[in-house]
Length: 334
Image (tube, rainbow, N blue to C red; front, side, top):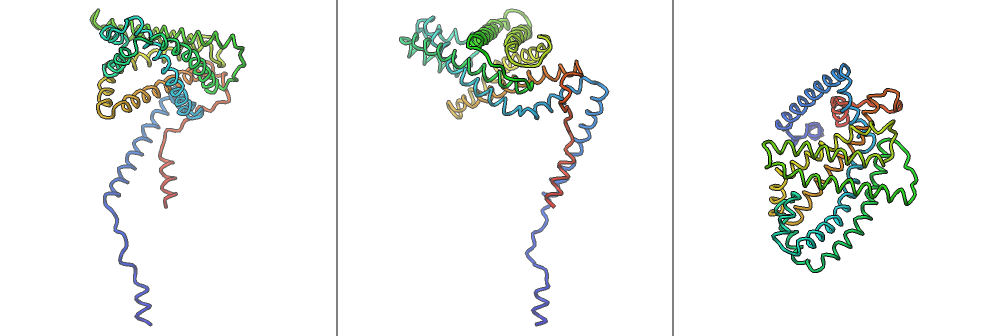
């Protein structure tokens, strides 16, 4: 009996040994958390002395409070549905203008900045459907008007949610007027992007000039669109920061799409086929959705920055430190 009791009291011999790699990872993680918390504290302290540095923090706080990721995803999805019939309309117009000539169609598509992989696919589709280009134009026009209306409705809801504004009830005439303004603004943005692309080779440093011109055109177009979205602005000047951000952001995306994105899309097409191209386009649309949401957030934050009496109920605090969260996770794990 004594031998059995002594045997039961012995500790188990198959205890898991401590992995030295996990200890090193824990020390590296703690060191990274301490460094991030230290720099976050410095930025927060500096933002108290320089009020303009509080704008990114307040934008981050408003982004989290207004579910920015969900809003950007909704905008990206509606934009994707809007681009499908718009592409069909543009393809039908190009086919009708060029008369089904593949070389002329490829040259026309090259002006728009479409990558070579997509340009080849569109050219083949146009050459095969040159006899029914008017059907593509008719169907694309009807569907473009309908998807433009739905996208405008989506932007109305998103902008009202960011601004904490009520969604007004509009008549069909007002909805049609806003839809046409939206379509006209985007046509101007697209035409401006296609025209300024030719400045790269005309003058030295043409890419910088084309960037500035496209930023100005895109910013003015987006400012025109936001005038028809619900908000709580005091004047139209309160929407200028969002228009500037949209112009700079869209011009940057266009430059990246002309310099970096074509190779990535061609690589994705070679590896994954059409799904790779669709995936790259969807990621690009998601970035555009975040840009649109960020423009609305910047307008509200900048108005609050200029007028402290505006939006007094909003809590602009945003905790950058990650030390307490790490401590909580360690306590819960213990």
